[in-house]
Each structure stands twice: as structure tokens, then as C-alpha cells.
Image 1 (cartoon, helix red, strand yellow):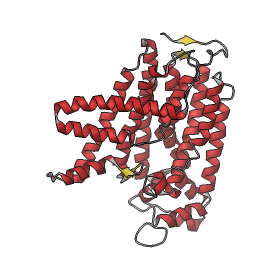
Image 2 (cartoon, helix red, strand yellow):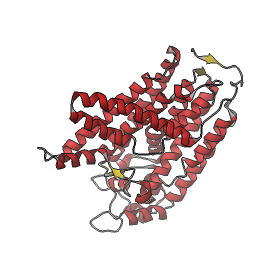
Image 3 (spheres, helix red, strand yellow):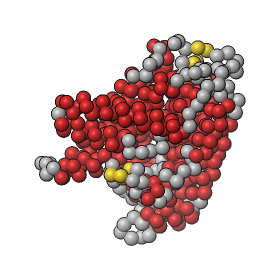
Image 4 (cartoon, helix red, strand yellow):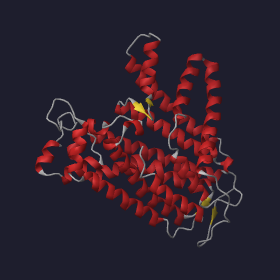
Length: 377
């Protein structure tokens, strides 16, 4: 069906929604069914490809908060027509999780991370497979290469899932336009993130927030909401604008929480090693705030070394993550980051106050603004 334009503040009659648990189960079921079919196809070509696809499947289904399909669902649900069936949009919602898998796998290769969600990262898994099989060549190089290919495959699979979503041509065009913008912004943000590590002394809090906006806010909250709105087949600029402002604010807060968890979180809870960003000297908003708020003596301890990493905070030959985290906290950067999270959550919730969306969607997005930015992992 073609796009409709709603006049004034009129919205369609309210339709039933699903619980968060049922939504996640439905998305994961869609992913599992799709991946089963893809494994069969690749297995028929060569058993090694079947094994490759199974590793990709295990990475995609290894848990996670499923925030992107959740935000997209509420973007769709905020204006969808009476009786609109969830099954019709499930492939598109699942595609966002596949896109996320692509981003995570590539990000882990770039950061040389050991674990993700408490399990070995893709490149570590493939390197271990290479070693066990006693193949020729460097296991680490094979692991990185295979992981990049898994990420690429997930990106293709995301496209295939969107293509399976039963949409009218005009609706599909709008959905694809939002999806393409989301992908470009995610890649742009990732490049800025990598670039920051090469010249951290030139970075600033504002530029770190720009990275957060493009690397995280765009494809976690902002564009998934607008993606969901596009799935509804309805043109409503006032809602799209509210989602834009809410998504940017809450998405930045999400990344700021991630910065705090990277420095102060418990690896047993986060599923990732503590201090990876600090060890690399990544110029996050947290670290830039620490530089900005530090005394001259503290700033000297926080100075970047020529390789880009932060100088050892304990004066030893190795980086003491706990001591460095304590130093950052002593500057007041941790407290200020918490304040910035709260400010952005308030800003995001206010952006929805007058938007003509379903009351149930308003309640859910208000709750998500809080839960997504005050999480232990």
C-alpha cells in the first residue's frame, strides 16, 4: 500500500502490541529460520562453507539486547494501522540485528578485541579453528580475514531480509533510503573513531560526541526509529523530526554509558575486557572530559604517548587500567559524564512530548530512554 499523509495530529486507531520478551523471541526466531536456510544453501556448495555459515549463525544468535529492532518496532508501532500484523515487518526488524552483527564483527577486528558478549570474538574463533586444524599460515591473519568475510556476509544477509519484507514499492523505497543512510552514517562514525586513535591530541569533547552521534546514535536509536516509521508506510514529518531529536539525544547517552562501562564496568557483566578503550588511548568523550577537567598534574599523567595510548598512570612500564580509571574519576569526568547522560535522556523524552504517536509507544520509548542508558552491560 502507498504512503499516506496524516493531517494535523490525527493518528490511526490503536492496535495491539507485543511484550518486549515476545518481540525479542520473534526477532530471534526470524533470524534462526533465515540462517538455517542460508546454511543449507552454503552446505550444498561445500561443507567448509556450511561450517563458515554456522559460525556466523552462532555469532548472530549469541545474545544481545536487540535494541535496534526494538526501537524500530516502536517506530512502526507508534503510527501503524489498526490490525497491522507484526509478522509482516519481522524480516526488516531482524535485518537491523544482522546489520549490527556486521558492525560488531568488523569493530572487533579493528580493535583486536578478545571477547564479545562473554564469548571469543569472531576473529579469535576462526584463528582457533585454524590452529586446531593444523593449517598452513598465520592463524591470526586467517582469523582476521575470515571475520571480515563473516561481517560482509551479515551485511548481505541484512539486505536479503529487507527484500523478504512484504512492502509496497513506495514504502520499500522509503525504508531502503533510511536503511542506506543508517549504514553510511555508521561507517562514517567508525572511520572517525579509528581516525581519533591516530591523533588523540587533536580531539575534543565535541568531536568525541560527533563520533558517538554517527557511530552509535544513528544506527542504534535515531535511524531505527525512522526505519520503523517508514515501515508503517506513513509520511509524518512531525513524528520523524521528534524521532530524530529523541534518537540523537538517547543514542549519545547510550554511547556515553558505553564509555563509562568500558572504563569502570565489570568484565564478568559486560562480557568485554575492561579498559580496551583506555589501553588504546581512544579519545572518547569520557577521556576528553578528563583532559578538560584535569589539574596540570593530572593532565600530565593523562598525556598520550607517541603510539597513541595513554601514559601509564602508575609510572610503571605497563598500563594500570584500575589506576587510570581512578585518575579519570578523580578529575570529575565520570560524574560529568553521568550528568550528560541524564541531560540527554531528559532532552530525548521531551522531544516526544508533543509528537502525535500512540500513547503506548510514548510510554515504551520513555522507558527505553532510561533502561538503554542506565544498564550494567
